[in-house]
Length: 176
Ligand code: K2U
Ligand code: ZN
Image (tube, rainbow, N blue to C red; front, side, top):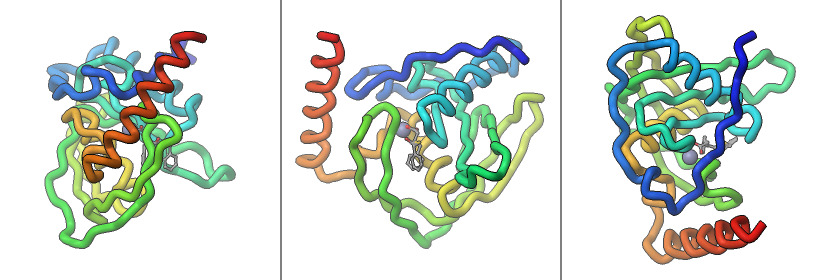
């Protein structure tokens, strides 16, 4: 079992969460180590998704496991340079949260179905269609790679309110 490292998750507002992440040129041992660390950090949070910018790494790597059934075994996924190649017109509304915006939730409408193409850890190109919570999650994670947070879909007043709460949360956390 490789040594995995828990990585600190950046909290909004943070300029690194608003940047567009860089494509990954080759799937190296470092990239595979990053993916392992991100999976461990995601399960520890706990969460069902995590994008590299959330641990302060500005490359295009996301991990997901939206398998919610505690009896079923985990279904970890590593998506390198993921891109949405088709999305349904039909929308789905989900009350989203974000590990970088703790304890804030709001309804976001997104395409119900998405087809995504990515590189897997063996450097193979994969294409898959997602629906349900997996579809919501993969779109939420790909947004992170483009510097978009779920609060960017909200009305300005609601977004400002959440940002102010996070600034307070970070001040109090800094004071320890
Ligand atoms: O990217 C992240 O911050 C992890 C997100 C992923 C996510 C957000 C909204 C909807 C689907 C996925 C979550 O914080 S993971 C926590 C969670 C767990 C179960 C259902 C929704 C969110
Ligand atoms: Zn998030």
